[in-house]
Image (cartoon, rainbow, N blue to C red):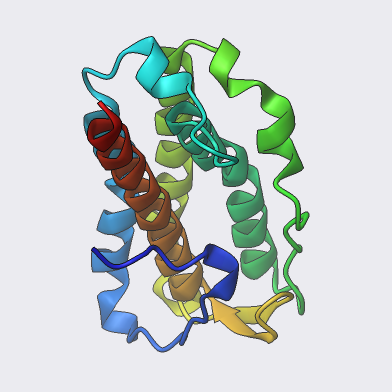
Length: 175
């Protein structure tokens, strides 16, 4: 199995053609049900135990919720015509401080689903002429369009779902 490349080591080519926007939005819409399926039937211990220094599976899920305001804020900025997008805090402090392991998984999943529905609803209602509006992504130092933001969100979901799958496999191998 190939190792999961760390998120901060990834580079992105923001070149998705405009006609792909509805397809990308469907990927973003699919994040919450895919997360729910990935976590189905896991015990409390399986969800909340950290293996090595990595987040627990439930913290991975909580992180997807924690990052929603950043992505929604970036969408606001793109719609408003900002030149530079809001930067990520660089530390994931919100996730480290949220104590997701003390929360009910159902609450995390419901909040993520609700937040994502609002985000996708905004993408669904977006005038077509805004799909390619761009602003500079501060870490990547390249223009990010609205279609690229949607793709970035979908890739971020996939990244954390892959980490969850890897943690589940690791737990199984330790039994």
